[in-house]
Image 1 (spheres, helix red, strand yellow):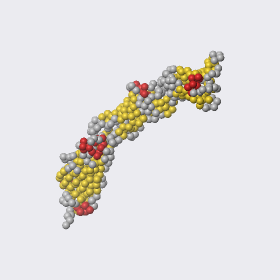
Image 2: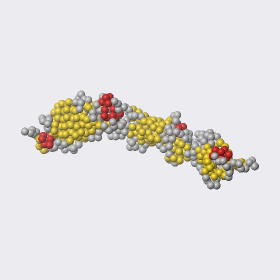
Image 3: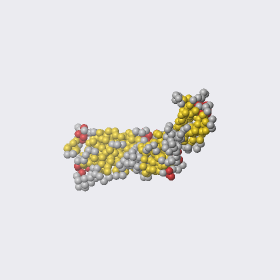
Image 4: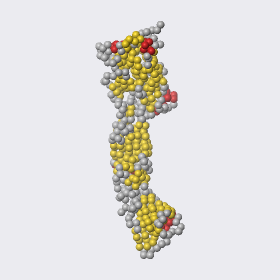
Length: 522
């Protein structure tokens, strides 16, 4: 003979067997409630914990304990562990529950159990209150928690949020909240994406063989990569020697804002912010998520680059979508610029992406410099309960290379004639370098070879005769006239000087000083 206990559900008369026949899957999750508001809801997004907390040997990782208890952050309360019932049980229903864990073990001497209570008029995923002391016993084991003799009718009307005189019988048991859970034996969480899930059953207290609710497996904890810092070098800048005045050089590529700004690097701060051992502590890179806490009070980004030693570098900026920090050359120390960004500045709507730029508007030419470095360090955020600090980051900046010296002369006389051509090259920059002279047939344009000079020191003028150029270019039968193309990684100008061996006179055939463009600069 089947037992049949009668219960009232929203005014309808139901039996235990009826509840069992329509039992549906309960949902594990977390309870979220705005402080001072009437009601809370189950959220099924999982709590994150950093996988690096477990990146040790399995035995050591299994010994790490971390909490799943309730906590408050900002104006929001987070109770990471809860189970919502699909069958809302009438207040006089006495039930038991078994909650199983997968992916970890329970490490509890005592777990606090509360019934998630609601009124029949409240929407399906909203709870009126949490009622404590409504379960007779709680037995935490390694792989499960046994909960028995739970009944909402033992609660007062005030606990149900209905006032002290309200009838308790109108309340419904809509789920269970499990506070103070501590997990261990979770070495699998060393792998990003690994999870802890809960499942179980809700049973009739009088007849435990009668299943009132099946709790399908649901994820409550996921291991995530912690906050990560990525530094990406920008496109290297190439200086443009065809610039007026001759003492200054802009960028032909890699720059911006009229080719007077060079982007050095971008710094991206991303990740879940899963740094704490307390799963109820919500941590985000900037604290911008409602009720969350920032991973750091500030971020210091130190950029070391040769451009900060360049007299043409006027200031450096770090910018995001919402703010900008500017440093003048006085803030540079030994070629390093350090930006200190407040927690509200270094991340947010732009996902923590910062851009480091350097502006040029000085009177000196821009030198070639090698790639520099970027170092990112986080200032500790007090009171967030971090198990580990946000990891520092580093990377390289873009480099600066010279677009090079460029000049061209025609009607250069071959050696052996009464007129002798000489090329004078002056280095007015701040870096030494050799230039290459390419010899073309002035009549046909055909290349006849090339000659590379020795290194031309800063401030030096190098004079080269056509005989030396022809020998270096491998021209064995010099005759006629040449076109000379001169290129190299210096800043300066060149002259074509013609000497009349008969009269002893010199003539400047260049008619101008050429410092990088094919038509020269007056």
